[in-house]
Structures are given as C-alpha cells and as structure tokens.
Length: 547
Image 1 (cartoon, rainbow, N blue to C red):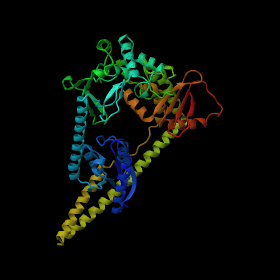
Image 2 (tube, rainbow, N blue to C red):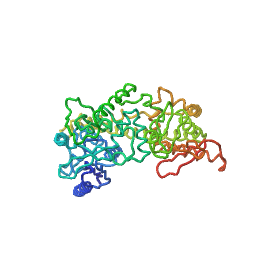
Image 3 (cartoon, one colour):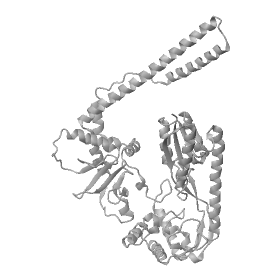
Image 4 (tube, rainbow, N blue to C red):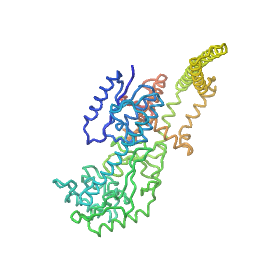
C-alpha cells in the first residue's frame, strides 16, 4: 500500500491551535479517497513559512532520505513554505528520492505548480510585510507605540492601541539607572544592585547588564531609549533573515530614514542627564575593542576554546563563561548576581579534568579489543553487501546483453519489425542504466587493520588533551565534542571543589567503558580524587566515575 505522510503548519501563536487539527482532518480524508495509508504526521506549530528551519519539516526530510514514505501530503503548498526557493528545493529533494508531493487543493504538485504557487506565496509574504510596516508607520507618526511597551510606561486603556503613560515607580528606576551610569557605575554593577534590592526588571524579570547597556547603534537597552527624553525614534533598524540560518539579523538604518516624533508628555529623563550618559558611553567605547559583529566587548572574551558553549552552571542553569584571564565562572552570578555558585575554574584545569577522565576510561584494554572487533565486523558487513549488490547488477547486465544478442540475431535472419526495434531500444537504455550503476559502485577491496592499530589507538588517547588543543584542529575538535556532548554541568561538590557532570551521547561510550572496567575491579574499591559523572541521554541515572 502507498505510504503517505501529512505535513501541517500554522504561522503564529495568534492563530488557533485547531488550525493544525483542521488541516490534518482534510488531509486524512483526501488520503482515504486515494486509498493511501497515512504512516506519519509532521506538524510545526506557530512557525513562519518564511523559514525552512522548522523541526518537524527537518525531521520529515530526514525520513524522506531514509525512504520511509512514498508521498508527502499537505493542505496547500503555502503550508510547506512561503519562499519560492525553499519550496523548489524541497520539491527537488523529494523528486530525487522518488517521492511525490501532493496538496489537497491541487492534487499532485508539478514543477509548474511550484513556479506559480510558490511565486504567489512569496508575493503574499512580501505584501503582508509591507502592510505591517505601513501600519507601524501610521502608529509611530500618531505618537503611538509601533511595537512593545518600554520599561517606565504602562498602556492606557481605550480604543486606540499603542497609547501609553508614565509609570511613576518604573520611571524612578529609569532615572536611577541613568544617574548611576553617568556617575561612573557599570551596567553590571547597576544590575546586581537592583537585583539585590528585589527591584523587578522589564516584564518582572531579573536585571541584566545587557538590558541596561543595550547597543547604541540600534537604540536598544535602557540607556539608549530616546523615548525617555520625549522622542519616539522609529525605523532605526531593518530586520532581514539570514538564508543560511533562518535567524533575523538587525541592520542599523541611516539617520535620514528614521521617523522621529516629539512626545514631551512621555519624558522621564532631562536633556542634561541624557547627554552625560552619551558622553560616558563614548568614553567607554574608545576604551574597548569590538568584535566582528560590532559589539563593544573585549576581544579576549570572544575567543572560542575547546569546551566553549558546553559548560553550564549546575545551580542556576546559565552558562559557565570566561570571566577573567583563562578562568570560567557562572555568567548569571557575574552579570545578574542572583546565583550562589561563586566557584571559578581555570580553563586549562577544566579541560584537563574532562579530557583526562575521558582518556582514562577510553584506555580500557577491553574497549580497544571491542573496537577492533566491531571495526572488523563492520568492514566485513560493508564488503559483503557491496559484493552482493555488484554481483546482482553484473548478473542483470549479462542477462540484458544476452537478450540484445538474441534480437540482433533475429534481425540478421530477417525478422525485423517496429516492435522489435522498440524492444531493442528499451534494452539498450536499460543496459546503459545498469552499466552506469555498476560504474558508480565501489569495487570491493580487502581491508585489514594494521597490526599496530591498538598501539596507535593508545598513543592517540594518551595524547588526547594535547591533540584536541592543537591550534590547527582546535575549532574542528570543539565541533566534534559539541556533537557528542549536550552540556557539562559544574556545581559545588561536597569537598568544596567543582564537580563535573557530562550529559549527552558521549556518556553512553563512558558507560560502556565503566561496565568493562568494573568487571576487572572490586565493587568496593575506592580511589581518591575528583568526581566526573555522566548522564547517558535522557532517562538515564548519572554514572559516577572517580578520576
């Protein structure tokens, strides 16, 4: 029976969740009419069709590449995507895997449908974008908020959306932040002080230094919001999606295209204080470098190390980041001051502790033996499969050549007619196809492990720390580790030092190593030293190793 999968999507959380159910019901009825069997459902909720980076769409395409269905069905082509290039790419990928694309609205999708309907979907997206922009412009010129509500204000009840008035309590906090910064305090110190006093930040969240500092060019952050001096500035930035990642990127616009509206009734900060803040920002900017994104941050803090992005505070869940020269610490404690984990650890120490733990477990002789066995088994299986496939195709080619030879002999004997010629042409085409498949197949060759491979393995593992930290491969090594480790949690241990917990697929490898090692050690044997725990994926209890 034909296997069909259904894909459904709706654009934003402002739409009804029932939209998915409605699409699925329509698609199920269509599949039933065609006599198809629905084998899987993929549904992306509250995700724009302007981006192809959707979890369920990605999962569906992975299943397509694995040959798990024959037809993909959607209510309409715009549910799949609203960008012509994305829809065309998906159509080509499905076509490559011999999978048909159908919609309830048009039936089987052809290249003509992709061109016409895909263009219409993209035009709708562009038209919608312009209408939203026009609406925001109208609200800005009328002195109403074209976006969200800034800290320091509250929304006025009424029929006109976007009207605001000053919130006196929040306004006092705004003035306090401006005065503190103009007086020489850093955004980080201000955020910590406000959090220690229990002063709620925007939307009730804790204060962060970035919330206060923002970015001058984009007008973001408390210190850069011109509304506090009674001036609404709109269209300071344009937003465009990066086609490689699907993420929105902000680009500052030239000042001549800004829309500026005077709103003196919303002034919170006087001009003198505003200018003193601008002067201090300029002075601080001159003292600091900038990274490639234009952020005024110390370049040394932007270096990527072997475990960058993997370290997590086990107390509050925020990242463990570089907070000094080659030292990691809780970013939440440093910028917000709400975390109790005050431990720091040198970069070299955490790398050595993690990699030494991996090295010791990977050095288990039983693991080396297991590796050799599994490698040989995999090579044998691959070679066997390739040999069988090649033998089948060679047999098929020989059979075709015999049929062609028989037809040629018949023609030589005078038995020629149009049907014979048509059959001969079909066999020649089939022969060319099989020959091409054979040419593309790898020729089986015997592969044997070098007799010194176990020793080479031990040498590489022993030099694990030095090898992975080599400048030439550090970036690639970091990416490999990220593919195997979800996160490394650091939290205070019983002995006052940081304990380390590994989470992710690499934990399964360590769990196997521990199982092998435990067969050779007494169960009650204890070794002094730090602890390294691993969590082998979801649902597994942490396994504690002594280093």
